[in-house]
Image 1 (tube, rainbow, N blue to C red):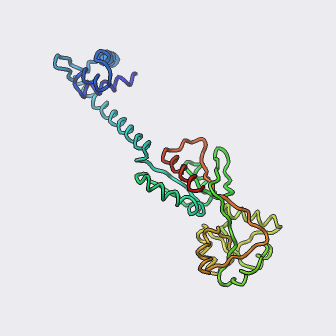
Image 2: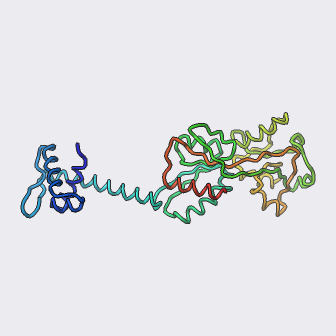
Image 3: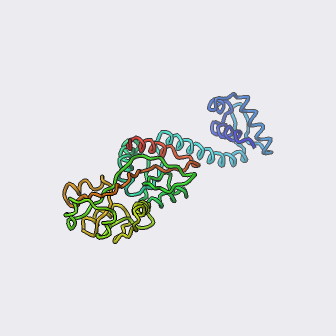
Length: 295
């Protein structure tokens, strides 16, 4: 079956003329006539009544035209949509992001992206790092933004976008600790607020404590990073917070920085993508912005 015959048939039927169809298609009248003769032969019926005034569809031709017209209109609509997507005038992006990645990288990038491409719909899912990686692996999101360690394995690939440092802070009840340097071992004497088990942040600090021969047993476990600071402000315990998150609270003396004898290794926000899946053009554009904003 030659599908191009049906495209030519559509234009002949629409223009009621072989010559008119040839002009619309950038072809020649003899070539259009030959193709229509071949189509009639393949289908075993006449599609056109030919006369000096042009062509007229037979009943069989009319029935075929109704089907072909619907298909052609769908194809043309698809072509227009693809063109809009190429020009970033239409489309949708789904992103999975951890709380830290959302605030440090994704929000600044989305602000610029929405200014340039307001027609693109953006769907952001707030995940823990493991959840974001799983969602990417299941193709539930096109991009994932997560903090190290991400736990991503091939075909998932990660690219570091920016580094951040975390600090230990306490609320007013622990203000006297602001002038002291504590060791990780000293923290056993104080309640501790931390992201819960199953998060990569818990795993990160669990390993940090283990290197000192200590167990991490937080008194309060938070589900997301944005819950930790309010809990610390409420004197529920000491907590590790990205330094950027704590600036305003430190300036207003709602919390106080506590120095640690053991340095906390820097962490990074990573872009995680599936190397076996082609991203939409809109997602590719957002990826460029994420890289630019993070620099």
